[in-house]
Image (cartoon, rainbow, N blue to C red):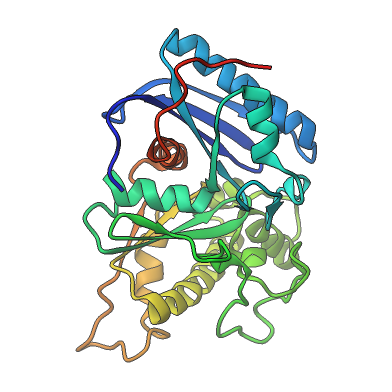
Length: 320
């Protein structure tokens, strides 16, 4: 997607645990940024938090107007309610309308994984690739698809909703069939997200370690934590092999907190050929698995590009 040169662009990445905002110029340079905690389970407080982030950006921008794009943990139906959000307090709420009323200017919403895909396909790890599949492994597990630099959304806004398919080639006795907030069970998200990893470790080994602690202890040689990460890598390899069989992307980019685990980028490609159709020594899998080049900032950058692509902001910004 081509970037328009004129206005500044504010991007906000609304996650389950944090909301991050960044004000970018036409070249993609960050002029201002701020990160705050997301109010858990409180819709009104979430709207207020987003409004405060925008107010901070306005102070930083002075008299210069900017577009606003927000990456959300679900799907925004145009002019209607949110759906499929793992931050369930957003579901059924008219987030776009409420934000526009609070801010006095247009706001563009897009699924956060789509923002990641757009960012990384534009000037990140997937730059120049024809097809980029970008997966977020964090509080939830979602994905976005960019084809020739354009985000693929689909008529239902569901393109890339990989986390709410069953874990493929499930292994009896190894892969728990846990209930998911979406109302089904056995979803990829229940096992590959950060909370899923922690729950899997607790089931096998007890304790209350979170995903970050498990990863840290594994590096230090903890056998139980290393076993947990090995199970996670094997599950991720199967889940991504199904993506390769269906989409055959040039690049798969990982974002979210779990993407910081370096062993994923060697272990998973070494495993996924077992499930990729017709893969073998003579036909190795050519898909590349890479971390998001812009790291934690990739989602917020993609949100900024989404807002900018929608057009210039009004010359006057009035809050109400």
